[in-house]
Image (cartoon, rainbow, N blue to C red; front, side):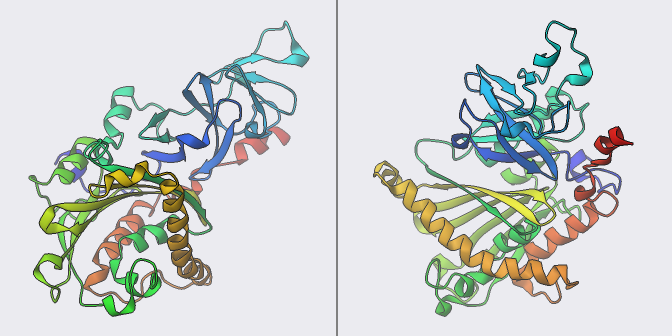
Length: 375
């Protein structure tokens, strides 16, 4: 079988070996380092050569102080504790208290591959021996390449939430909640109706393929598992029967293609990047593309309005997901009963349970190696 069709190995680290969306490009300036955790790994990002971005472990090799509270001087990252300085490759270039003396390699910061694309800074914290060729091949260009064009309007947003990232993934794969959770914003209760989901392809939990589907081909080319489902409303009028397609790209990215006017070929395409921060925290980065009302983005204040409205919608979700997080912490199951409209969410949970069976991502960062210095 091709790699993307192979059965999931319980020893493969499915969560680590992926590119993760860390921050929006607009959040990273040339003067201030930016700290965030991704899968529990503390990371610091900074611009070291004009616009070039570097990423290192947010732990100074000297005393384990967070480098993200330091400063940037001509692209050099300086630790605020003792002034140790690091270049874009993580090499320690200056130690004020040992000026003029040779600098040991142990003073270098641990770096991670990162790249800035599509208005987002991405990081790879997986296998360190992954070749550059494989890193390039696995990058999720496919999420953006068909819509990163002038004929599509683009809006960005980001939000940090105190929930397990999987709860948001399941929520985004679940259109049946819209008339209730998002009453007054995206929908109204009278919109509720029969919904069904049919699986187009699925390499996440089984080997159901569709060689003619572009999204399936993308998964093959990037060795990514995933699935695609079509959501329909059987009782709706003909032009509204198909709500759209929901595609999951392991480990944590989604593409939602929603018809706004199928007859005229009008769509809203949502790229939802659900980055795990810790077991109970996540960062949501979202990119919306639409091929209608493109001119509206030129109106002053439209981007601000988009983000304000997006926050309002996310607040509605978080009211439920935050409560769900509490219940799961008390021992409840994420799924107790399911219907056809839950198909996509159930598929995701099955994939994740399998992927984490022997390699839970939240156990991958071992801080004990730093504590060993004290023993």
